[in-house]
Amino acid sequence: MTKPRHPGLRLLKKYSMLFVGSILTAVGLEIFLVPNNIIDGGIVGISIMLSHLTGMSLSIYLILLNLPFLYLGYAQIGKTFAISTLFSIVSLSFWVSVFRPIPGLTHDLFLAAVFGGIIIGVGVGLIIRYGGSLDGTEIVAILLDKRCSFSVGEIIMFFNLFILTSAGFVFTWDKAMYSLVTYYIAFKVIDTTIEGLDESKAVLIVSDRPDEIADALMARLGRGVTRLHGQGGYTKEKKDVLYSVITRLELAKLKSIIDEIDGDAFVTINDVHEVMGGRFKKKAIH
Image (cartoon, rainbow, N blue to C red):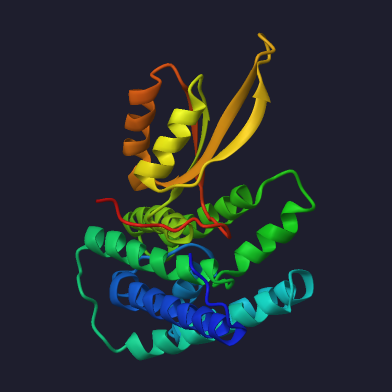
């Protein structure tokens, strides 16, 4: 992810992405989920149910229910996070009220659950990626994680299972099950949005022909290679270990190059969710 160097441009990009994320989330809610009585997890899900039960605007509940958690976030996590979160929540509430009069795009529950989950996942993913949040339960989970043995993910899952189960009593059990589908899809899309579609890979190569492999990777893939000096644990033989970062699209070509030069090379490949600095640039494969 290339970042603008000027602080003002970085700030503009950040809040532009938070703004876009809030619009997408509002579209997913008001165009797909709310008209079909399908909910998402967290404070958004609670807000949808309360809005249905009381007749009050969803945008009001989104702000009111998040205010206590926003204060916690400010006190425990930091001012920057709190400001980004407040901006995202207020922006979401505004766009929810704008899209509310627009009729739902579909009344097919499955399509609403799937496409609502995808759009909300992209929107929330953008907001998280650029330092904000729309869900107070995430803040509570981060704070509770420091005081109990459960992970942040486990705490959020517990909250959301309770919230999604409640949808069965407020709406119907089939709507609750569709809500679970939405939550699962949104969860997966959020991960993809945060990590990026063109995920990078870190590669470690142990070979008896390190010079040839390093030269081939630099010449044919255009990737830098770092040599790490290692030693065999059993043989005590000194070996050069090659380290390189490539894109997911280049993985097949890298395997082909290594196999062509040294079919017995030992290779490990790990996911890398973000690369900063150096000369690494993502590029298309021709």
